[in-house]
Length: 424
Ligand code: GUN
Ligand code: FE
Image 1 (spheres, protein in one colour):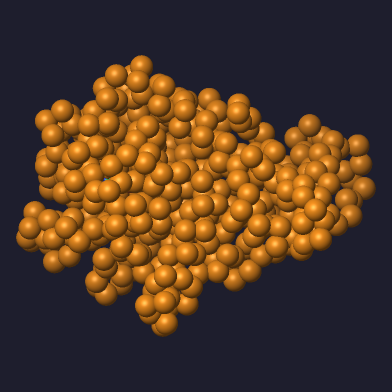
Image 2 (cartoon, protein in one colour):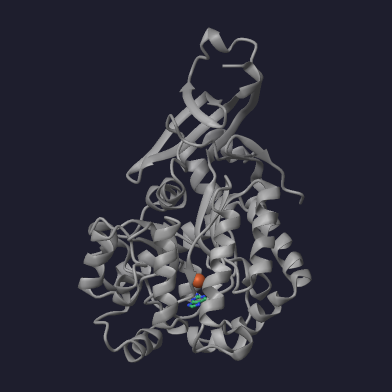
């Protein structure tokens, strides 16, 4: 191994090999070969003599955060119209905002600012919705690639039950999606994902076409599922042949036939939970969004007990922040409110939500989100230079960072072994 391909960081290393607890390696050396984690050592072996060591002293080194569900195009919309519920919020704010992305100049402005904030917040991998617009979606991929982020990006598909200014012709929608896939399928860190907005804005013809594309490109899929009672009722009216909301996606090969993410998953029948489990669909908890739109509380503990995978998402703009530490805190808080009403469901623990925001979510990207051998080196270095940091244990310092400190405490960010710069 050439020395220039070796990266060594020293500090207090914390990660979650599983959701039950933290692995802590105090004052240790994390050795990275070609962007991939090789080993963590207390004493550095002689073979690394002469390699450059970045000594972070007492700082915490943790995996970068994985945001499994957010809308890059809704970045300017954060905080707006949040006194509404989902369907009114879509009609009165979101569709109007997304229509602006016909203008690539506007898209460039929003997507640059979005990407900057993603980096600032310590998100190293994200799964994104763009809009229906192919050119703007390409632009988002260009910006993410240029900044070195890891992402799946969806050109959104919608061909019914939406305003004329955002409705696609079905065949054109499929052609644009295929073009988008041709352009981004074989790139390294930024890749395309099949993205029907949700069942109500999709015809069966569109979903069937997207299911075929998912197979053709062996592509992952993302959408929204069972977020709001009005939405669930509407889906039952629109798709009377399907017995349940999730069956609309399943029927068209968009429910685990290839790796699939479903955001929200609040109002699930027992059959839906079983299908999610057997099809290995990954569910995404978006606490801020669920609070803001008064959508409900996702049954996270019940899903975990059923061995369903759960990740975390910021869901901007229904969520008002890209902070994954705040998503972790809100997930715990919601689980505690839920616990007050249902003592059968234990609240989530910090290691469980940390796992969701790192290794759990990272699985969607491959070997991402942990510091075990063979994992991509995606990491954050946290400076919590307070008196408290001198006296506290590493896990207490992590607790304090997640709850009470913020992005300004992140002093370095790495994605696939490359250092990423925040400009702020
Ligand atoms: N369901 C369909 N579209 C959307 C969206 O943009 N945001 C959220 N939260 N839910 C949706
Ligand atoms: Fe969403």
